[in-house]
Length: 379
Ligand SMILES: Cc1cc2nc3c(=O)[nH]c(=O)nc-3n(C[C@H](O)[C@H](O)[C@H](O)COP(=O)(O)OP(=O)(O)OC[C@H]3O[C@@H](n4cnc5c(N)ncnc54)[C@H](O)[C@@H]3O)c2cc1C
Image (cartoon, rainbow, N blue to C red; front, side, top):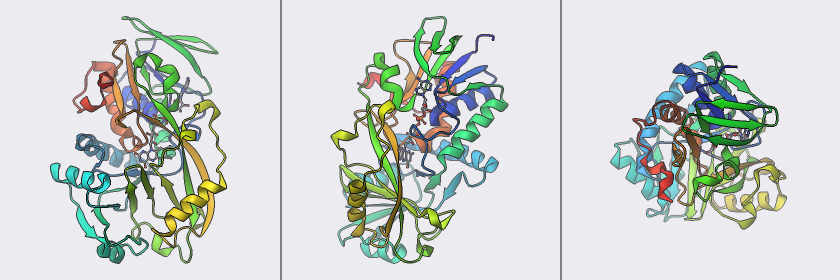
């Protein structure tokens, strides 16, 4: 095999998008993935991911989101339903990061939004029962995307562009020089001009020399059967939502879509617990009934009709940077390596634009997209 221009390590959310964009630009690409296409063992599974533009995490993400929405529309044109716009409700106290941060981003970037008081929330979205001192920002362009289908579509595009994609092959180590990289698996040793490292929760082991203290966290998604009719939970009537309780506890959820027997999906975003810091090869995939019961209790006073019966839970992993901002750059120690990590539980909505950014960094060494916030040198 001729030496590929770029080797992409990890074909999950970010890596599959990078492979698609690199191949579309005519680069020769070798992709290596330890599991199967669109697998459920990393961070890019569980049917749905929230997408929004009024970004409370930092307004610097908004230009990337604008471009991501264009690329999501393109993916949706090939696989209709990959993106569903259903409106998004960001609930909390007026000074919470979720509300104030979303409003700040919306104002700074001129994004369409509405503010609702507690009565307005209850009237418009009757499944919510906010206390009188809560408010919400409603963003019409918010919605959800389908992670497994996104990965599969990017892999399809990469292969159509000539990429050589290999599954069930685990990378054991890599070295880099000024001329290129060498990557070792149990099966073979590969040389390439450039390495894009997009290993998700396996980043701490593969990027130990990056100097970013990443934390891998276990996060469980839950599906509940609501009490009463499924009708008020459907797309078009019920929005995607994030509800900030305190800076450490946010819950979020989705409307119902597809098979009514699937129920309605919800999860906790904050609520850090020491036992949630995990080794990705030894992730506890069991959903503990006491945790499901705690989430049901939490929901009972907020979306009272939601926690009827707990249907199922699925474990997933966040790879979290200390400031919860992404780490996307040329590797500071190796000019022939580009890194994509630290997505801190909010990366999926960016996946298509990350593909564009990673292709820029690998092929050109720089990008027109604003990624200064993601510089690993900040640690
Ligand atoms: C429960 C949960 C809810 C989330 N909700 C949202 C949301 O609503 N909105 C949002 O925007 N984001 C959300 N996220 C975050 C988002 O899903 C992640 O940021 C994103 O999926 C990360 O993609 P990734 O490519 O870094 O990781 P992955 O998709 O896991 O890809 C990494 C890949 O690298 C492979 N790999 C690793 N090491 C090796 C090796 N040595 N050899 C070969 N292959 C290797 C892995 O097998 C994997 O396929 C959520 C995440 C979770 C877990």
